[in-house]
Length: 299
Image (cartoon, rainbow, N blue to C red):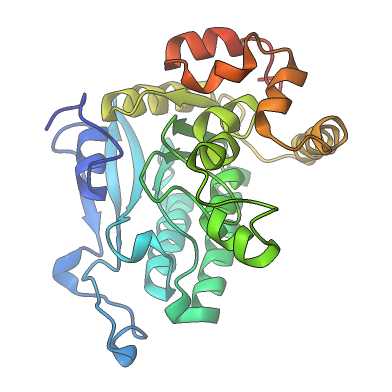
């Protein structure tokens, strides 16, 4: 496998090892230590010796970074007590060691239902740790390109970071399509309409709405290049009240402008996108050219 291989089809460790500089990854709390969930065994559920996430130090284009990669093949990347503690511990350790950035390879359906409150608390701790790292001037970059997307608590974590990088195939949202359909009915959201799902939660829509700062092809090398560029752009990554107020103003304006529109394609038309009905069919390069200057986030 090489850096042109599919990000979506790779495992968490394959993504991580090909993303960072060759031979530079030093894993913390690896599988050999067998730190597993204390809850899953009690339910006769399978465990993983890394609890579904690999964390550690590495270098990215020579820069010292901390990195974490969630494994979507284990419980959809869902967060439990140990899984979340590893992410939180990595971010807190970053405050002491001061890497140039923390890079999170997110693939998760959200909180692990098997662990209930322990998972919810874990995600809350990860959010706080992300914001603490940012407040300390350490940029946190999220990569989203796995088949399970970034949903639930990890969807919120992604939006707490300095920058989100997605592929067209990626999805980012709070609630998954099936959850919305179950709660509000198929009339609200038909989870079987895959085109609608990707129009609503997929990388292109998130890029147009300003929810992600870069969209790349489904290739590990493309994610690597975008991550390097995103870190280089974070010349003033500290978290400020002014930045939060600007983000809130953007979200308020978004609701006012697009809240009554029933389909993302209608939003794209309202943005003035050329040939909005076919925008989802464009390859990444022509898509980005069509999107230039029309994004809701103004970035």
